[in-house]
Every structure is written in C-alpha cells, then in structure tokens.
Length: 162
Image (cartoon, rainbow, N blue to C red):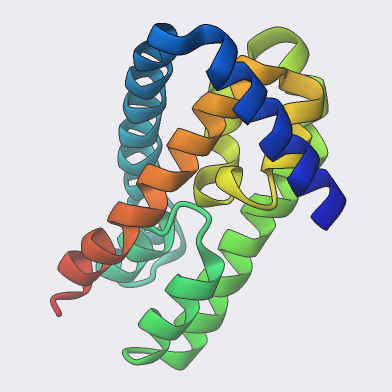
C-alpha cells in the first residue's frame, strides 16, 4: 500500500508541475465534487434512516461522515454505541466499494466515481484512482478527499449538536 501511495504522489506531483496554472480548474472541480458528495451523503443518510426507522440525526451523521469511518464511529458511540458501530461499518463499506468498483466506473465516468470513496479518496483510495483514472483524476481525488477530511469533523459536530 505504501508503494502505491508513493507512486500516486509521484504522479500527482509530476502532473502539477506540468499543468501549472491550470491547477485552479482541478481545485474548483474537487471543491464542487466534495460539496456535492457531502450534501448527497447527508441526504442519503436521512433517507436510509427514515426507511429503516432510526434517529434521523444519527442517519445524517452516518451519511455525512462521507467515508471517514474512523471519525464517525467514535463520535456516534458517545450518543449510541450500536449506531457508532453501524456508522463505522457503513463508512468502511463505502471505502471497500470504492476500491472495488472504481476500476469499472473510471472507464465511463471517473469524476462521479471519485465521490463514491468520499474522504478516503485522498489516502487509501488514491492509488486506485491514480491507476485507473489517470493524473487529472488523481488531483481532483486528492482535493476532494482533503476538503471532506477538513470539513467532516465540523459538519458532524454540528449535526450531533456538540
């Protein structure tokens, strides 16, 4: 895994050096994708919570974690330990699904396929994106995951009422 992350970092660094001033477009794309990922994840969490009959607030938090399983589990466990486990496993499953289906989705729609990984697209999902999506997808993926990682603790705290 370390070798893949280093290789992805090399590809991204090399691409940034080549495209220079065009990086702004990748930042805008990554930012818009991160915003839409967070919003759609919260809405999905609300829909699933309503459907299965759990607290809507916890459903929004589980979805709003956007794949950051190591954050959402402990945060929700302070309110409801069982839902903390559910949040952890649901977001871990999101990362696994991203790693498994990105190679297929990258062929037709690499941009929305990045959103599946959520926060993990800047770390564990990045090598898969770099290999199957290319350099531009890697940059967008890194920005996407970074922005979600920076904003998720704030969003989850607000949703939990901390």
